[in-house]
Image (tube, rainbow, N blue to C red; front, side, top):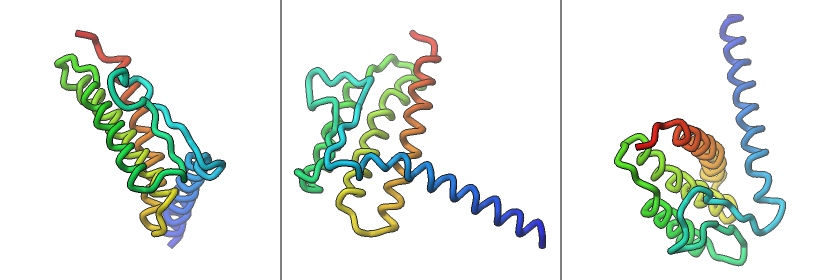
Length: 143
């Protein structure tokens, strides 16, 4: 019985930590109505601006369209080398950033608590994955 109680306590501590991280990661959304997010590392010289601006001045549909345009441009213009590892990470970074941008639009306009919680998790986990991919890109040998 004590093992089960210890296991449950560990799960509660872990869940509390995830909630705390999520709260810190999304706190910026509620500090103001505009939040400029960076798509650093992407070549945005010939298309949509390299940043996505979340704002109540735009409809949900406008935010989703903008996030898709920025993501699509970033993926199409990701620097390809022919190395599958490099090219995968280079394209997945703007893809993940697009998911983060869409999740922020959901947090701004959404009403369903389950989907809003999922949006918070997307923001935290995909940001962590972007960090990992950027680190790997720096460590991969260049061709």
